Length: 186
Image 1: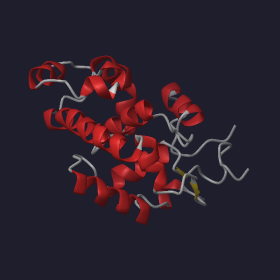
Image 2: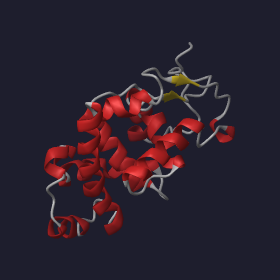
Image 3: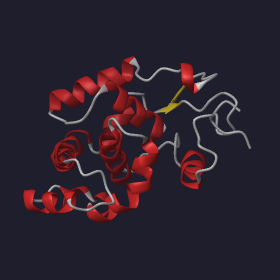
Image 4: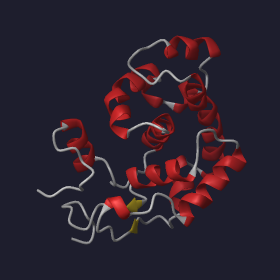
């Protein structure tokens, strides 16, 4: 089975992530909030690092139930920061709670987090030709547009590269390499 060449074949967690999650159209609001939050934690780090810490994040952030996360206090975040199983960056941890509050406003305005994000791609994944991920784009006009809108709304730890990675992960774009068994046009 041929996978995208970025997959570390000796890592079961990475192989499973690629084969069963990455690039699959994700429209569940809770799951999108989790993925978005984890992508903001990954800024400047490898995604594998975050994947290895994902279960700890899920436990500490109450499975990313947005209605619970918005009520976290500064004291609770400081306690979470002491956990050695996550990235212990206080501004990034605070951003999860801050962004959760803004996502509640988006849910009210658009009827859901999924509806908000998927509107940017007209509710259908963009399928890109990707001969090699090493030469592929890391931003796009759509990720630029989403980033601009999120920043205008006050979101933290969002840049076009982070948003493009989010778009790839949640299937808004299909950036599996052309030779990969997961590529949509097979």
